[in-house]
Image (cartoon, rainbow, N blue to C red; front, side, top):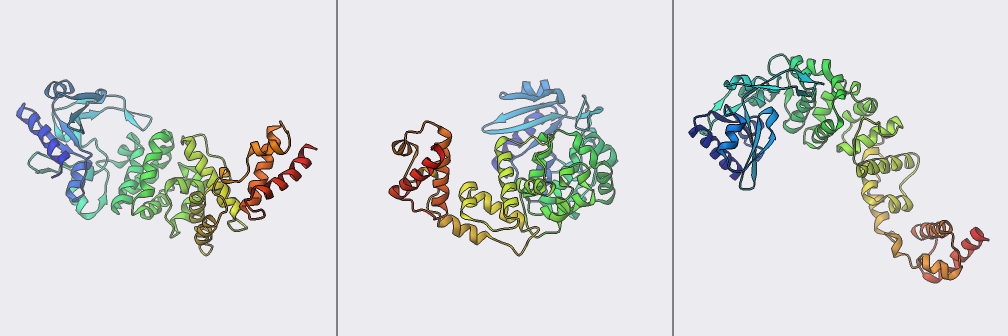
Length: 390
C-alpha cells in the first residue's frame, strides 16, 4: 500500500465512522486489481457535498455542482463525490445536472465501462455489480448497459476506450465496438481541448498500434477529416509516432494548414509546421547542413522518423547526426562577424540589407563555402554590401 492509498483509506474510514458509506471507485480500483500503482484516487460516498466539507479541514469545492469536493491530506488530493444520477447530457459531453442518490448501484451504472465501475471498501473488498472484474481478467472493454446511450452521453468515451486499448492491450467487446463506429462522428462535437489529451495518451502508450487499428475499424476519419490519408498508412507501418508527429504527418499528406478546430499551443503549431517543412523539403532530396542548422537536429530526427512510414528504406538518422556533429557553427552568435562589424565596413543604415548579408554569410559558413574567419568573412561581406547598397 502506497502513501496515497493509505491516506485515501483514512478518508473512507472517517466517512464510515460518521455514519456514511464510502468506497474507492473507478480507475484506482481497476489499476489496483491489475497490480499497477496509482496515485489518482477517487472516492464515492452517500455523504452530501456539504457534509464532506464539514468532516474534513482542508477541502475545495472543485466540482460541487456535480457533487465533487476535493479533500487534501498532506500533499495528496482526493476527489470525493456523492453518489449521483446524471440527468440529460449537453452536447454529448456533460450532464446538465445531477441528482444525488443513496444507492451505490445508481452511481456505478452511470459510468463508462465495466472495468471502471468497480468499487472497493476500506478493507479491500471489491463491489462488482457489472461483471467488471471478469472483464478485467479477460482483458475486455465493455460499455455499461446500452453502449449507444453511453457514447451519446459523452462521445469522449469512444477515445477513452481506445486509450485503454493502448494502455492495457485490451480488446473491445463486439457491441461496444459497433456502437463506437456508429457514434464516431459525434467526437467532433467536443472541444479539441478535451480531445487532444486523449489522443496524446493513445499515441504514447505501449499498445498504441492496436488502438490505431481500432481507429481505422471505426472510421475515425469521419470525426477527424485531417486523418483521411494518414490513419490507414500509419496503422500498417512499424513506426511509432507521438501525436504531434502524427498530426504533422497528416498535415503533410493533406497539404493543409492546421484546421481551426484544433486548438494547439503556438509552440506545438511551430513544431508541426517545422516538421512539415522538412518533410516537403526532403521529399526528393536528402538532409543537408542548412536544413539541420536552421531547423534543428531534434525536428529533423522527428521528421526523418515520420518519412519512414512511406519510405522505410530511406532512414537518414545517421546522416543527420553526422551533419549536426560537424556543423562549423551551431548558432549565428558563433560567427566571427556581426552586424556592428558590418557597419564598420560600410555605413549602411538599412537593417534589411544588414540582415541579408549576415544571413548569406551564415549560409556560406554552415555549408563550408567560407571559413568562419573574420578577415575572410569581412572580404566577402564587402562584396555583398556593394552589390546590395550600390
